[in-house]
Image (cartoon, rainbow, N blue to C red; front, side):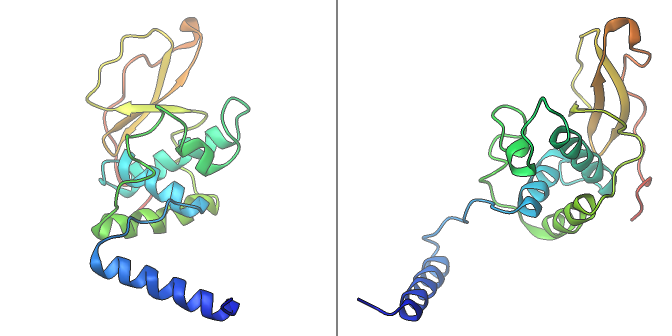
Length: 168
């Protein structure tokens, strides 16, 4: 039976060869940073830092809510809540790096100041006709909202898009 260092070396070489030959898929995300970056990358349409921070703020609002899973990966991997393939598709280019850096900022406490208590968002181009959607922000190609009793909705339509609130 091979020594544990030998096993590790064999595993590392096998993974390296698989990657070089294109026979390997990326491993599933396992850290909160990976999961947050994926939500930001795929949901903000790789658009803006504000859009990514807002998506991250929604994820964190959900983590803190009893109505959703209590981890970032649990929230992001919830069925039918985020973009199809959010946990499996490849992230590429400068937007992937921006998503990882921005994910770290959100996990360290940064929030978009306009998301407030919102737990939901949809593409800004989508027109929803529900009477319980109180919109708080439009940025990064998405409209962010809180669900409220209809009599407490004061902003029933998405506000005009804003960018540049969170910097960069």
